[in-house]
Length: 169
Image 1 (cartoon, rainbow, N blue to C red):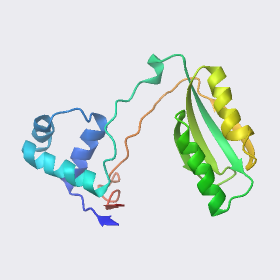
Image 2 (image 1 turned 180 degrees about the vertical axis):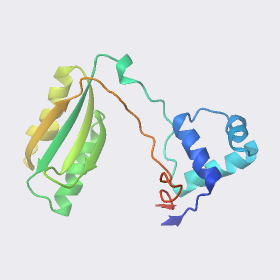
Image 3 (image 1 turned 120 degrees about the horizontal axis):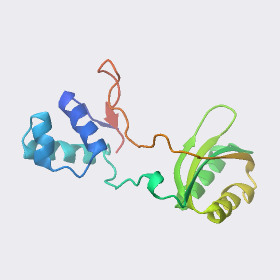
Image 4 (image 1 turned 60 degrees about the vertical axis):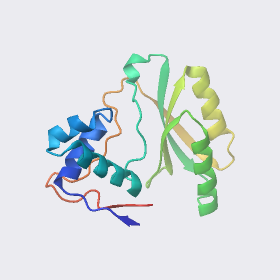
């Protein structure tokens, strides 16, 4: 575990980067009161600690109407660590799996699929859920309207404390 202590400037920078990672170092620095080189050092520190993992462009699903979004609730039969590892590896192999979470409660996994067309969604669901002998049952919820999408994570609570204090190497 790499200890990463964040100050108020770090929290502000991380919030800005999560909204728009394409902003220049100068622009970010102007907003938080740092020089571009100081911003760069902080961003490099976040990367080295594993806190920043990717810079990506996020498409708005409302502008890609042929994409079908599906939220799948999955219960597996055998929940041993080995079977869990195997199932997670299968989920990671499929590019249509946009998000996957191991959860508590009535289901074991929540899997979010993004597929081009219903035919492809059926193929992916068949492969991941119907053909896997360890999947006991699954339910698919099709997204009618993506009211809010995003991947930004809070780095501190509403009271200004909590959130990120460390990251794994």
